Image 1 (tube, rainbow, N blue to C red):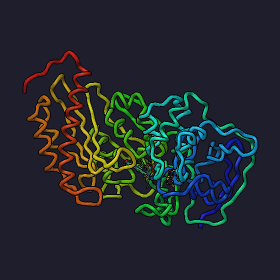
Image 2: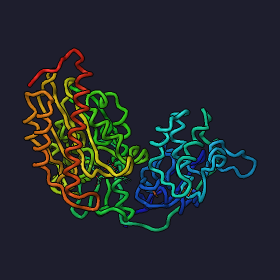
Image 3: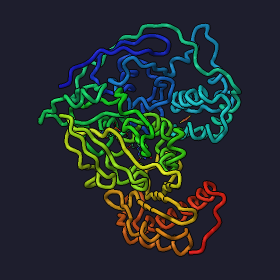
Length: 473
Ligand SMILES: Cc1cc2nc3c(=O)[nH]c(=O)nc-3n(C[C@H](O)[C@H](O)[C@H](O)COP(=O)(O)OP(=O)(O)OC[C@H]3O[C@@H](n4cnc5c(N)ncnc54)[C@H](O)[C@@H]3O)c2cc1C
Ligand code: FES
Ligand code: FES
């Protein structure tokens, strides 16, 4: 049985002190320990957005934030907009009501918090920016048009609620099976004695692990967590000696905006923008995606196309370097030992490399790939010098199609070369029929994906070498 812990954090301008098991969700802390029931409980798996709160100014799903990660943070909930007494109605709430953007109101607290997260950083958002920020908030009755109109009416209005100091105290009396060890430095991890009796998990962003903890995921959540969220040595993105090194704790949100990633690994930035929702991208990490070992995990095809190695550290201090395409043994299972932590990924940087990503999905957000394609090409003018073609959700683990790479090398991106690459990829793929898509559909989408990525790489290459003229094969 886990101990309960007492933690303090800033809440709606005041200070909260709560005693509870370390792995329960922030959503439960707010609703059950502090009686702040404006934060709704919809799905418990990051899908509906009804539980959205601000975590250090950024919108996150509180159902996926474990209590242990809240200490010292600043949390803002819908109750900060309370206009009882003499407080005026906040302009954001006023806009939602006057534009008819509230019907049953169940989604509204989450919509408000996502909107504040957006408007704080972008006071005059476009319709597309609003759509992206609210993609993780489901509304079943109002429809999004009225919500979009309400937000667009708020030109440069300050949307942060005015804090009112108050002390919050509460507890959750139950215990649960998970204990948490926080790790701030890799040295602490190396010195850790991992016991055989532990069912150990690392905790990074929690967007997979908390789904299991909440009883919604496939796997078990284990009983001992090592929390990596405050380990600064896992948070870097840097280029050293011609190689990009990205820490396992870097989030999808950071990957979408990082200038090095956008310049030298556009496929990775493209994949990052398509993961989950804004709330999921704010917390979910690259290392968590790899260790989760889903055949549909978006990091795998991209990193395989970029020729990536995964660097790990073991308790005791030993390190390993593993080609990313060899990390997974079968769906949900990596080759990592218990206590072996992914520290960073490393891939070569080459200004002549172009890369792109395609993901076949039923909707623009909150959807895992039916199939995905990533291609990295190092170009010498118009001729391919090195090629890596990788497929996601096309087998039990990422498929690196070596023959597709070989058939491109030494040639221009002609229709014939692209068609040969398609055939080789379809031969190498082993997709299954499941609830997300049929095998035949997946095969068809591999062809669509390769042709689309190749067309975009051709354009990328023209832009990066404008003086080059097409060269016949
Ligand atoms: C609503 C929703 C939408 C999603 N959409 C997508 C999507 O579009 N594409 C996609 O690929 N994924 C998606 N995911 C899955 C998830 O968000 C990603 O896999 C994310 O990158 C996981 O990272 P995390 O930091 O949250 O992992 P965590 O939940 O913290 O950990 C996941 C697993 O990895 C292990 N782990 C974490 N860090 C390390 C480390 N450094 N070393 C060793 N093991 C480690 C943990 O023990 C755990 O087993 C979605 C999830 C949700 C809930
Ligand atoms: S309750 Fe649905 S996202 Fe948290
Ligand atoms: S107003 Fe009812 S779900 Fe959005």
